[in-house]
Image (cartoon, rainbow, N blue to C red; front, side):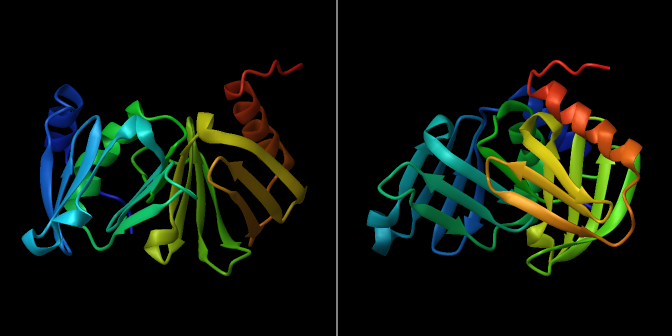
Length: 206
């Protein structure tokens, strides 16, 4: 399923990213703004309420129907809100994807940019999907939907290949090793490799 972004929401939130939006979730209310996320628990469980500045979040993962906050507390404690309204991702993905660093994980398929090429793939974890590569990003549209990813080229630490039917994408989150259902032409792999390395600040010799 392609990820949908409301044009009006994009224009509004990019202009005023600090305006908090409220979403009803299991056990309370979730408030999201351009610089913080807060969970207000129901009255009988107020001790569960939390508030985080985005810069204090070790990893923020946003999917079409879930939000996961991994903090620097103890052993990187995780708080998962699932399900959340789809409107949350539709409104906040454009903001986080342009303003946050590699600590933001887009667990959804952003297909707004036309793909320059695509291949059917399978993750070694048996997740099926399609890999789409465009100028500036790599998208994994997966089944199930929550396994999807959208990576800005600058968020990818490296790409590697052990052959024409293999591609590994390494990010701050983890390593994704894909079995390719069609052969990846060497020129396409080299083009992707150069784009990733340039984004990492490496000088590529022609």
